[in-house]
Structures are given as structure tokens and as C-alpha cells.
Image (cartoon, rainbow, N blue to C red; front, side):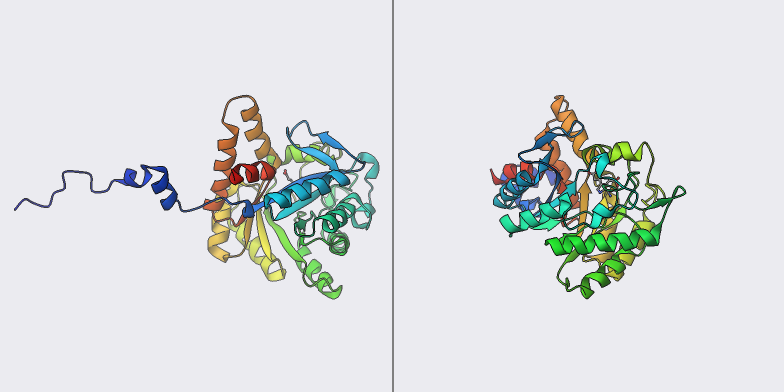
Length: 333
Ligand code: PBG
């Protein structure tokens, strides 16, 4: 008898890659339109679609146009839209009072979307930066960001957004204790059903640059940074402590931000906690892919799909991405 010595490689991994059918059958992770949250920028006016130079293909929209965008998103099957307000220098004050006004542009947009497109979930951003004279997410006194005073303001902001009809509140400020404070206030005000998707692990990142142009915060921030409240990009264990804390305080879902440079964090969060986990593919990531694509240096559609699939592979349940409608259309074909 011949020895059982295979005259071929012991394993041929290429077998399951040989045809589209076999590749489909053996694919472990998939991107679906149901994974998408679409961030949009809203501004004053009517019939306005104002381009953002550092984010080609993304516009600041007036409320009527945001409603139209929400309708399109819902028709494409996108489950959620996230509203960010653009505010000029004239809307910014030291006390940030516009942040919790029922009639600020963000709350008007939330109400208008919920009235016209009730089936789409509306997510918000909670932080003072669109309303703050200095572009910071919290109150600044003598060059220091005040934590507890800021949390009080953020709670008022959360209540105003819940009142406007928001389904998902997104605290992006990175102050300590904000989730617990918001959760208690929401319960007390009868908003038990409003969910919180906490920006739990938000890094002090250079990839937010185009966003700060988009919301008008870049000039106000004037080259300053957010390192005393956003995370150090060198840290990973700390992200787990923040996630654990936010869950304990009442967060329903958690986020890692930015996305692509922090996929290792996404994976650790999912493995450790098994909770609904999201990544934010931020403005700078969008700009990189879009910019390279516009220059003909990469295939933009393929790069976009690959980058988003990577979030699923890293353990995310979903992703906030400016590509959402474009991806939804591609996935539908
Ligand atoms: C503000 C906020 C930022 C982003 C979302 N909410 C910017 C910042 O922290 O300066 C960034 C999103 C993006 O870059 O796409 N609290």
C-alpha cells in the first residue's frame, strides 16, 4: 500500500474562492443597507443645498431639503439619519443658550423629519460646539473646559431634542457623567423610550477636520484641540473603561469614533461587552476616499464598500457614514 502522502497541498484554500457562488457561500460578514446611519448637515434657509469644500458630494441642507433627503433615505431602506446643525459665528454665544432652544435649527429639523417621514429613526448630536463662541464641546473658563456645568447644559439639550421627537440621542461631548445625568432626566420627563447611542470612545482626532468646516466650528476653534476631553489615540484599555461606564449609566448603544483607524477598538468593544456597537466613519475618512477617487487614484465605489464591510468584520452592528445613500443605491442594484 502506498503511504498516505497526498501528492497535493494538504489544504487548498483557493477552492472556496474559485467562483462567485462559492465566495458568496463562504463569506462571513456582509454589509446591508440596514447597517447604515446617515449624518446630514442642516442650516437656515429654504431650498438650500450648499456644497462643503472639504467634503465633495456633501451639502448643507435647509430644513425642507433635509426632509426630502430623509424621505429618499427611508425609501432606500436606510434606518436612521443623524442631524448636525451648521451655525455661523452670529449664532454662537458664551452661554450656548441656543443649544437647548426648542426652535434651534436642529430641533426644527427633527420635528420636520418626524412629521414627514415618521418611519426613519432620527439621531442627534449632543455637544455645545455648534453653539459655543470658542467651538468647544463644553463651557470654557480660564482656558479650562468645565465638566459638571457642561453636563447640566447637555441635559437641557437632550431634553429639548427628545421633546422635538428624536429617537436616538448622540452625546458626543466626552464629559464625565453625562449619560447618567441624561438618562435620569429623560426618565423623569417621561421620555423613557428615547435611546442613547453614546460616543463612548471618541478620540481626539485629526480626521474631524472637514466636519468642523461643515458645521462652522473650525474658525471658532481657531486651531485649538480637544485633548483634555477626547481620548488619546494611543489608548485602548481606556476605551473599554469608558464603554463600561456609559453602559452602567444607561447607554443603550455605544460608538467608536473615528472608524477606520480604530477597528481594533471596535473589535475589543464587541468581544468584551456584546452590546450594539457602532463606528463613525468620520468626515476625514470620507474626504480621503472621495478625494483619492475624484483624482482617479482609487476606485471610489470599491474602496467605499470595502471600508464599510471592514466595520462589520470588526464587530460593528452598524456605521455612521456620509456614503450612506450612495451605498444604499449600490446595494440595491
Ligand atoms: C462634535 C462632533 C464632531 C464630530 C461629530 N460630533 C467633531 C469634533 O469633535 O470636533 C465629527 C464628525 C466627523 O468628523 O465626521 N461634538
